[in-house]
Image (cartoon, rainbow, N blue to C red; front, side):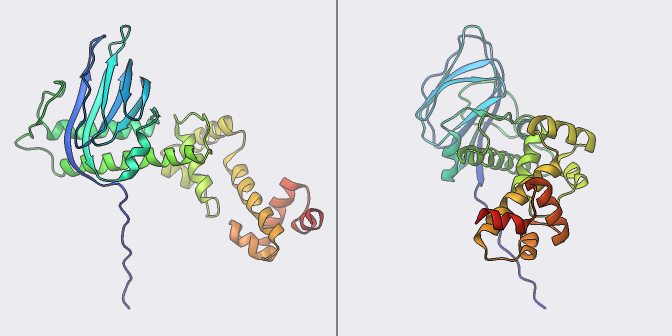
Length: 286
């Protein structure tokens, strides 16, 4: 028997690195207007900066960043009351999706901060200092560096960009509003929202998000007002109600489609939330 190999979609591909900097600027420092043939990620690790570009005008605070696209005019000013620490990474990426990250301040989650730190760490193992000289036109590589470190920069940076774009797409759909992205509970909420039809256990979530059941349950309910299991039932029953109204599937087929292992379990969960059985719901909603 021949196995079918599926191709891998690669919407974000980083092809080359221009620079990886960590700057500790003085207050009142400012850059001249600049543009270049590669993208640039600007992240504020400490303090605050005023940024102006073709796509964005505003301030970035600690924990925030933005991505300038290739050939985009941009510059920043350090405010009088702030001596900021900034991470700047120049990279080549041909995807037009990157432009989605250029028009608004991005709030980095804890996981995204960790990935960014790994990019910088790997970068410092590959590229020789100094890392804090503006307008360095060529960063020299060390004579030797850890095995695969060059590729790790690429992979971690691509992973970070994909995560930022996922969050951006959710915001654009209006699903996140002004929700705080910090902490694991946001990622868990997003994961459950996208996968509620599948079998999801607390053990599985703890493994995927590097936490424990006590912390997961406490933080999730504090932020969203429901336990994880209650939220899963809410999503499943919400979809089931739409399918019941359409009238094209049996109750058993609907139970299976929305993720329940048995029609009995589905009916019990449905009645607990709606106060009536699926059959009663259909009669009263006609």
